Length: 292
Image 1 (cartoon, rainbow, N blue to C red):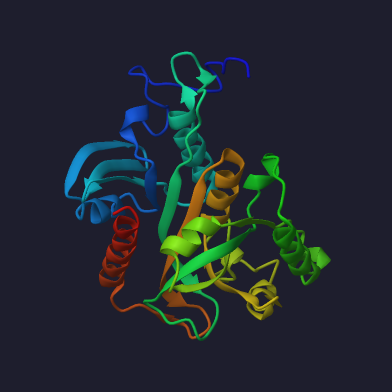
Image 2 (image 1 turned 90 degrees about the horizontal axis):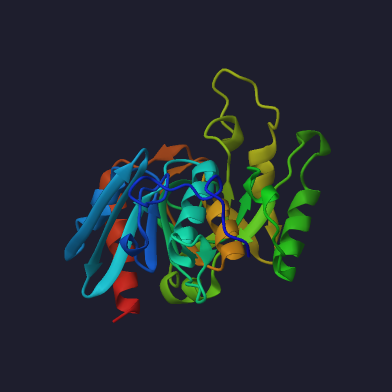
């Protein structure tokens, strides 16, 4: 690979990456991503020690440790556009020599754990529960810009889903999957299912406020879809991008979804902060137990 040009890999004056404002030693091999910058401190307050705090724009990073296990928690902001920046810059930090601008001889694989809020789209999924995404269908366009080979199960599921979409919807969904090892090690015991990654919060998630939806039946089609015992469980805005980019860059990813709303029963959590805190502790307990 040729040396990466200054316009393709942009550094700040201190040598840190342009958007994340991070240096290679600033991040651990296990990274928890959250959407809300304020949630970073809600995770890191459980660290035994915090060694680093940095921020730029919506990207807030804390790195520390629990019981000797080094962890980073990083806010991404909302949407897969931000995920494109975060995943690529994390990969650059660990796999490119920022001085020579060449790939390192030995590449690192990060564990990326998304912990975010979500809305359930099946009546039997309780609010205040935690759902792990085995796969994600993305309705954004991010992964159309990257070459990626699908596994046979991914291809079959995506083909089956595309068949139920009306042609006039002009949608081009993609699919990406969680890492099997992370599912088995830290996702076991939780509800599991396919999530939908939407490119917006209103019409892309079936909400009609003032503007009319061009895809009025989309939510019903998603809710009714079943394939080989699998079904859609929830809606959010980042997972498909995380899974897709992790796969092309050689990293492992899993997404934990805190269910704060149920779109079918039209109920919303009465204690969202308490439930998020409980979920943070559950995920941290799983992570620290894994590395004891």
